Amino acid sequence: MTDTLPPPTNKYIVPALAQGLGILSLFGGENRSFTAPEIARRLSLPRTKVFRLLQTLQSLDYVRCGDDKRHFTLGPALLRGGFEYLASLDMVEVAQPILQRLRDATALSSHMAIRDQREIVYVARFPARSTIASSVNVGTRFPVHATIMGRMTLIEMDDKELSALFRDQPLPRFTKQTPVTLKALKALLADDRKRGYAVSQAFFEAGVSAIAAPVRDGAGRIVAAINVTAVNAHIDEQAMHGELKDAVLDAAGEISRWLAHRS
Image (cartoon, rainbow, N blue to C red; front, top):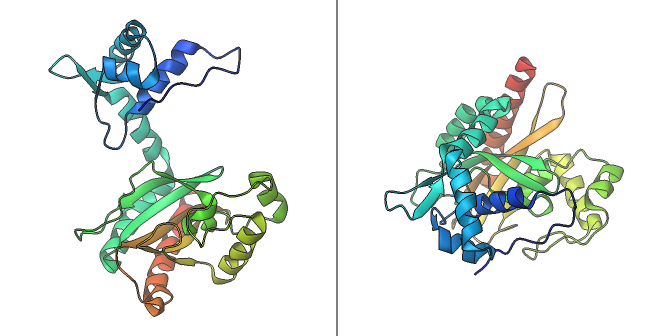
């Protein structure tokens, strides 16, 4: 398998920088370490160039070389930057103890996500204590239109804003429930807006049930969404619209109140 870097389309792009970032992007999930030949093969780059790029990244602590002098892993410089960014988000700091209590009260995994254009990005996670828990991690991205947490970040956008975001393009389908047109998405958002929350039974992924609610800042703007999820377990519909919904809405409201106090 190769992850060949695309040719630059902008004359101002610095190829070496793009190639260095390409190396860093290889790491993630189960890909914790690579040798230089593996990187060269994955990116279709000459081994001599990969060697120079790795030496540069290593000198800046973006990658580290293992004891065997062959395998490279991510270094603390990159990890520091990521965690400092998350720590700088007031709402993540505020949300963590509330999400942990939500997890403990419901026995379900709890999460927070923010919207980045047409995707949501997970910024906090507390997995269920059971053996089966949500597999998403901080940094995981999902399409905003296909998830109920994503929809929670869109519910107060007007037609003009939604059209600008999606540009009337077809929306990718993930399940039979996925809205594949802007019209279908707007219909779901209208229902979400009336309820103030959303529920899902395998809406984005088979075997996953979820309840989500929006989080607001001091000005009342939706800045994030939270949810609880159950994996490989059917949740009673009455519970989803009852005590679980109440727990998620209470947690979202508490986070919002803290953000209002800190703004």
